[in-house]
Image (cartoon, rainbow, N blue to C red; front, side, top):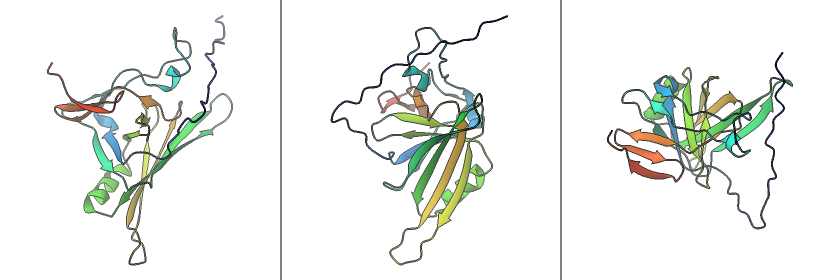
Length: 202
């Protein structure tokens, strides 16, 4: 009979005096249809050799996309969008409920066309925190739900908005992604630095 795994990699977390934690997310959120993902990066397991507590929250590897697929983007309304996570479930089967409110200005036909597709589809999103870190909403195991809503406003100076409420269950709170993000046939973002770069010819 096998033995239970009791390994843990708990470590101290220090908060330095004067440390800045900037709220909100940056204006551009990237997305791809889950059907266009050929292979996924992997989340380390606590049983992996030499894994650290920090690495448990970080994807290892890259997203590989099928054919000509790329990560497209939505430009968000300034200082209006946010991401949250919370625990759900019973002991032994608890998960994290990762959620975002992606708020965009206006109700352009392109936004309504995106909404029409995404409301019944499985879309994977990657957003960037203010500090430059990229994080993922979506995973191999669970469907990522996108629920569109819109508001025309009522006053002459009111805001017209389209909001996409994003929700997905995961085993990790909004995992960090440091791999490559293909955004064009010949261009990608190195998510470890946030810099755009040419895709090397193979």
